[in-house]
Length: 294
Image 1 (cartoon, rainbow, N blue to C red):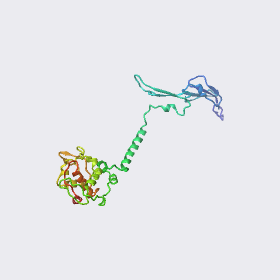
Image 2: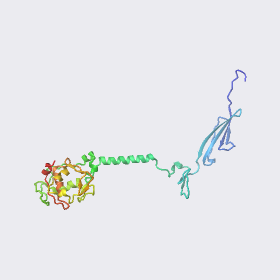
Image 3: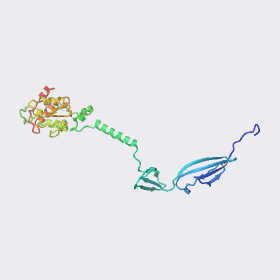
């Protein structure tokens, strides 16, 4: 090469298009060229388009382009995945879809597991729904005073029974079935006591006063309920109780204090209801006796 001469790059002379490993080209062009690939003449599946360019001195440039042909029906297989290790008899479900279906048959496989994020989202939604229901929906009266619900201040406030005023208390005198019961004008524990018991006590002690073994003590034949001195009975309802041993059995559940939730008339009425129900025969009490034990 003489000084001052410039080396010019060799220009491509031809472009040949090959399919897969075929040695005969589909077409040969002089660059630049436009090439139409008719996939209807190619079998479905994976293929490689190989383009070779040759310059004026014989240098060859090669580029490979993998592609997949899907002109025929799409096929789904359920029960066997690529690379699976199987033994014995394997039951498979196979199906085929027209090539004009509006979805990809490969993505229609149904044997794949539900994604983990779907389960996580489901658990979060269910947990939130449970919390929302307990926090904002009113508790049924028969459960409102159980230890589970009473531990939630918001629920306790929402489900607190309405204060009964003297105007709401029936004027009739209650029945005097119990020994030593007191006849107090204007106080009818028979009606009010049953109502307060069903709303605040029945969920734990039962409609029949039988309680729950080792959890909530029975009121039937209880020595405190039938005792001639009712002060202990009054104080338990006013201030609550936990861990009490009765007849050698320790009861684990905590009884909430009702002194700030019920009126003296309501407490006297429910105590009298317990003392004159289910065969109990304890002396009844008055609202004044409840007031004296605060």
